[in-house]
Image 1 (cartoon, helix red, strand yellow):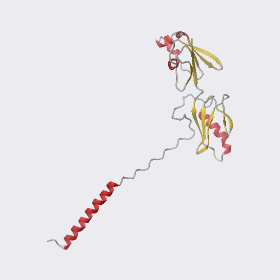
Image 2 (image 1 turned 45 degrees about the horizontal axis):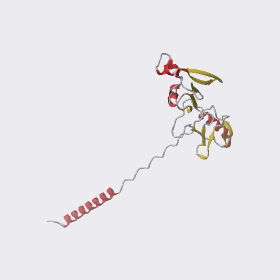
Image 3 (image 1 turned 90 degrees about the vertical axis):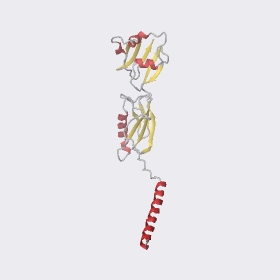
Image 4 (image 1 turned 120 degrees about the vertical axis):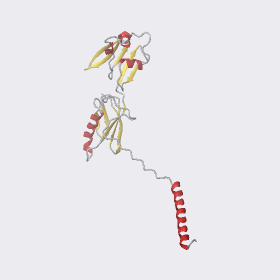
Amino acid sequence: MTTWWHMRVLRTVGMMAVCSVVAGNVWAQTPPTAAPAPMPAPSAPGTAQIDGGVPLPADYVIGPADVLQISFWKDTTLTSDVTVRPDGRISFWLINDIQAAGLTPEQLREKITTAASKFFQETPTVLVSVKAINSRQVFITGEVAKPGPYPLLVPTTVLQLIATAGGLLEYADSDNITVIRVENGQPVSYRFNYKNVAKRKAGSLKQNILLKPGDSVVVP
């Protein structure tokens, strides 16, 4: 026998089941809220780099024709691109002329910070970025397929430069290639025998020296 109490219990259970189904449908149709993306960490101030993430050569110092970007942390209005003049100096409106050639980007950053401090209540945070390296070049001339200047951005040997220049021409005097370098203000020369180096004859590999900025390789 179904009593009034039994009917009330059954009705209550039925309503609970309907509510559970409806709630489940609503939950299934509502996409979960995506977690907010983390804010990117700011770059550390006072660093020197080439735009695009290209690392600077380990022995890099600023030279004429290099393009630099000078900026002040959190103040984009002071950002300026400058080109190192042939006399090795740069012109920056806040501090006028300052010597840049021969310094590392970090050394230049420190000089600019010191010179600009008198215009700020607190010591400014200066950033120096290298936009383009035009001062580090080596030259190859004579009997190669593509003579001319080449950028020296990675360690490069005489043999590698010859390969970059397209190799020796048919009538090149490969036994008497010369590397001309200026050391302590005086020109010096180094002999390079292509055939001996290519055949790895005893002692010849020492001729395959690492080139330095300003070196000229002459292929007669």
